Amino acid sequence: MSGRMQRLAQFCTDARFEDLPLALVEQAKRHILDTFGATLAGAGSDVALTAREVFEGEAGSCLIWGTQQRVGAAQAAMLNGVAAHALELDDTGGCDHSGAVVIPAVMAAVSLSDQPVTGREFITAVVIGYEVGRRVLEACGGYSAHNGAGWHSTATCGVFGAAAACARILRLDAGQTLSALGIAGSFSGGLWAFIHDGSQSKKLHSGRAAEGGLLAARFARQGISGPTRLFEDVWGGFLKTLAAPTSNPEALVAGLGVVWKLARCSIKPYASCRGTHSAIDALGLLLEQLEVSVDQVEDIQVSLCGFLQDMCGGHDVASLAAAQMSLPYALAARLVHGHCRLQAYDDDLRGDPRIAPWMSRIRLEVDPQLSEDGEPVVSVRTVDGRQASLCVDPPLGAPGNPLSDAALEEKFFSLATRVMPREQAEQLLGQLWRLEEMESVRTIERWLV
Image (spheres, one colour):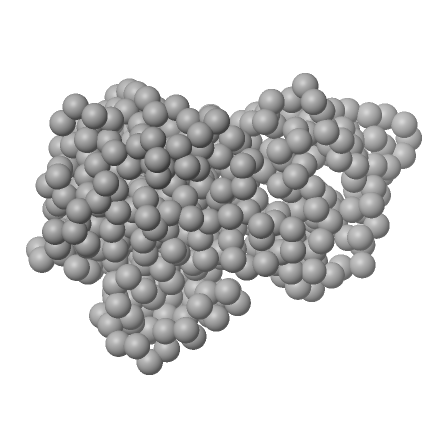
């Protein structure tokens, strides 16, 4: 196989657990357990509960994590994917939110496998899924270019990652995997229009991508063919259609098997859009640096790029979805509540009467000198006239500024214990830390109910 898409399919088939660097395996386990935690908490969200109602009464054997409900595999991929992204706690930096797409899809594929899937096989499939989803996004020109054009890459690019990962779990050969990737192109879609009214459709994107990737792999396994020049075809090709001005097809295979894309992904410490996190970190550090309490802060200015202004500059906090995309709210919450964890986005804390006055004292200013992927600069002015500025790059949770294992476990327990006893959450965590030793990943389900 000589074409780029063919090489990508061959990689999905040939990559072995033994090829993965030890540090990458450890990072994969961190992202896997983080995604399970986010999904368990998300299972109780309004959007996840409503989505499950659509499938009430439909039989199946695949578990919706954190519940007693079982549905078909494709529905489970969708519903667990929705829950994983529902509370903005899932990882980022892959296709965007790779964990919420790839891991629910892979778990659903495990239920369809005709033989046990080991922990090593599971980890390998997850790494492949992150790899392919991110490479498709980079072939589109990268995050800012593709998402700035209005496409939500979690959905448009994530479906390819899910298809690749599921193809590996279902043991497709290279030709079948090629078709799975081609078919996935017809299931790609997702738009940023939700950003202007706080609508919940964003939360569906990860679920639809997980479902689409699983279905693409299943269709290919049954012999349905997909276009073998899906990415580069001149008419109807993915890059020509969705990313013509910015496409970089070579990114599909550049450094394949040497540069691992999971290694660039981040784990979220805060329950908000990743674009807000650097500023949250900067504000906290500035308060320490200036040695001031909140009532000694006069105002805050944030210099940011135009892309971040458009994505996170809103002041609407009426809905959870809108508040989680709002940088002014994130900073106000950090001041008023002292944190931006999930609780800071509860209805009563969003409605705290101290929030609105603080949001009015947080000014956002677009700096045309900042690149579209540049982090913002936060300036704090105190009531006694002092001022300090800071840019945190990379923000907490990034590979260059990672959460400690202890902090990751604290996050996991804070989320998992919303739906299960602490003892059960500890047992689940122990299994996930030892995932590569597991003979059959399906045994995880006993701790997910």
